[in-house]
Image 1: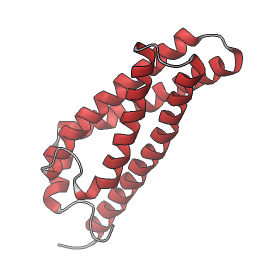
Image 2 (image 1 turned 135 degrees about the vertical axis):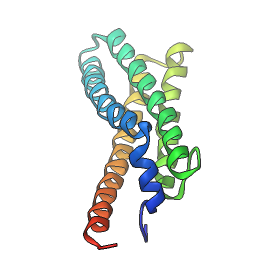
Image 3 (image 1 turned 120 degrees about the vertical axis):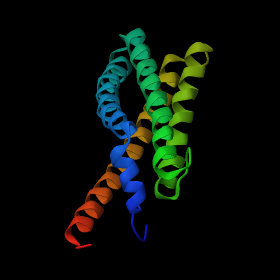
Length: 157
């Protein structure tokens, strides 16, 4: 991306929005849920035990994902004036849709009794791999925003 991630007005809206705090709470919560669930999924795949608990953890992870996606969309509307696909976060939003689609496919398989446990958990692992990439995208943008903020404070007005 060439140019600033946030205009001064967008930065002000971001800093004043309660949705920034909500995202700041939900993101590490989602990562914690992901780590626990990943452990349960890997245990189930390696031992064949605990499938019910792994499924519950994936459903919880998916619900947290939907929550962060909805609140993130509200945040994007407040800060950038668009519900999704604001230029500053376009590719992160595109990849988020893939993450959401994979998690939703898992739910369809689970509640529709489609496929084997291993196939279902394979979809969950694909969703989790996509989630890790997407989280990396957002961490990179967070770093860029901090660097932009540091540069903006260093330049006299």
